[in-house]
Image (tube, rainbow, N blue to C red; front, side, top):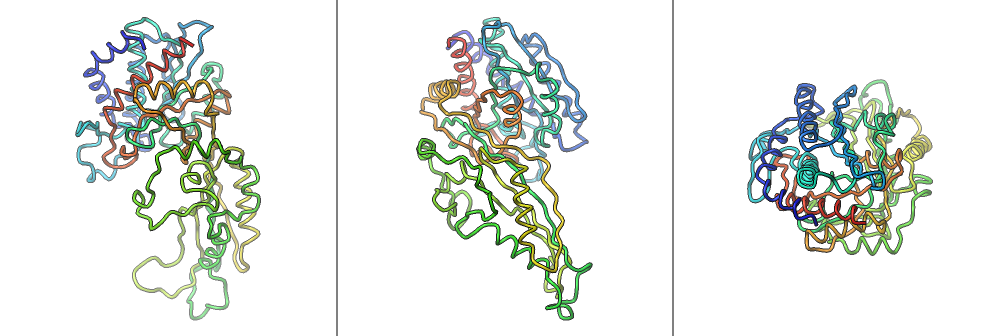
Length: 456
């Protein structure tokens, strides 16, 4: 590992934390138009840091929404690989404010953790890359590899304009591989290599009955109750063993190999009953709860509403009922195909006496998986294990990061998901935080990883 780079990081740690705190003080809430100026200020922070570090080219690319910051340093030469670094500087709203123990945009260190909105997701992890680039350029005068940086301001609102930018400017953003630190570890002190993410799609549909709510005494037994029809329809989609009953749902699912089941078995087991408060775990027949979560597709009812919701009784037959469904997908499954299968199931199993209207979820994404034996993944694991002094575990995550699938689709390059967050970070919740120990070890991990690429 490069001694001068490490010494620089150690000597400038106080300054780095001060800079990170300045970054975190900017309430760059992308979903709120009132914070448009703050989002722009956060983009300017990233821009200025790259400029001050010595990047060859840095620009703020305007979109119809919030800007994207692009930077490049290509001084390692044509023989060296080019790395694309993705992250985001926008953050979730801080509400409810009364549940924060300290102000969400006034960073505070307590018990070894830095508390602020964005401390973990994703400003803290983005800043780690910025700090490492600065350390290399200020000491060595160069980076071990060519680097392109893509830091956007719309991740928390679906990265609405990112795909078109990457597609339109494919040559500018092209690279040999990508690295993303917008994820975490399975335990507070357990280095974790994330080699797969689930895809995502869904529907919202409404079952319509009579034109208006009806008196249940006058019309009960004469017309179909839409809420009851909805209950029948939803129950037809999945059986008691958590096996989805939608025809052809599993047709394109890649099987879970023995090698992957072994990798999953080595992951520290989460006590789902304890962490969720549920009476027991329930997973797909033939699979453990962690296998189902990480590597098998799911179908969930996210919300159902219709009829009277107030106190007491209102004796009506509701005029409609609405349900929201989402599916987490695995490699091989296409989001549009899954939507088609769901729609086909709804239409074929719709009870008589009602009609249905359906809206597709527009923000769908395919699943992503890289070979855990890929040389870049193996090297990331070595660097991770060295700096954390613990063997990493390899996991597939049940969540979705659409940009990962987009980068894979557009550039067809391996993606290293190297995150340093922890289960205690409280992402998207009050009192979000990031452990300073992981900030320090994460910097060392990134330095070691970059250095190893040059040595290789």
